Image 1 (cartoon, one colour):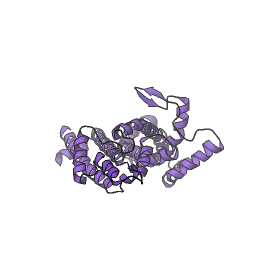
Image 2 (image 1 turned 135 degrees about the vertical axis):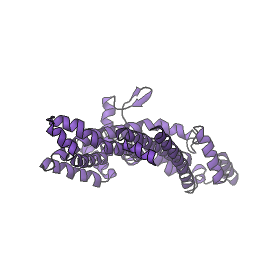
Image 3 (image 1 turned 120 degrees about the vertical axis):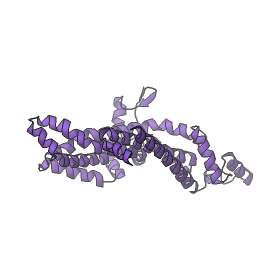
Image 4 (image 1 turned 135 degrees about the horizontal axis):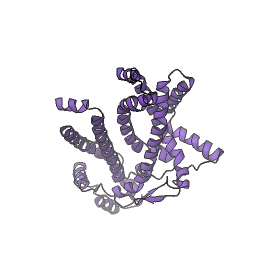
Length: 325
């Protein structure tokens, strides 16, 4: 087990290093932030001063070296526009994004797993066919369009829920959260539902497929022959086995919820890190773009590492394969 974990840690470090090269050089070949930082009427001396002050006069490889050395110390650069630490600006917005992602993941688990189990256990019922048809719609409809339609129906026409902002917040361990207040929860419901729709559909189909595969296996037939109740067979024997792929996919999808919440945050004006990224792209604020992407890379790597370790706990064959390799 320890050899497997150490190997995964080393692989994760290599991935972060390679991605830092791709992200940094990829962002630095796009546009010229000096055009956004200085006035069109500025003279050459002023332009040179701005270039020097932000270290843009150095070769790109040297800028990358400085970025890596500072990154090891936890410094991912200073925003060109705000003049503050890029990491600080992102971390200030990250609680809102994490709250949105956690709520979407919670909704995907709460809705997707029971519906998938039901559709898998009773595949011939009309209700199961309706569930699977709805999951196809969840995959097919674009997120931005669904968000706009939700605003039109629930905020504009019916007036049930607010369409923008985060609402009232309360501090939880020093972090402002919305779900602890009624106003904040009402602001959170629409964007979280919009972000969760694709994941609900994914969990439904994954759970149904796992259920249909496991339900015909010998150990399920043996459990029935022993006279165990249907609820015990489902919740103990079947559920444990179908959760292995579900846990893996949900772990990876949580990273995508954070990374790709940009569209939902933009549509609903949710004050998260994704909206900060969009604003930074429009202003060519390179340090924030690079810092955001590196944080997302780090999150994906950590989530993958945790999922792999959980997978090895749930399925010992993974550890045996790692030892053999």
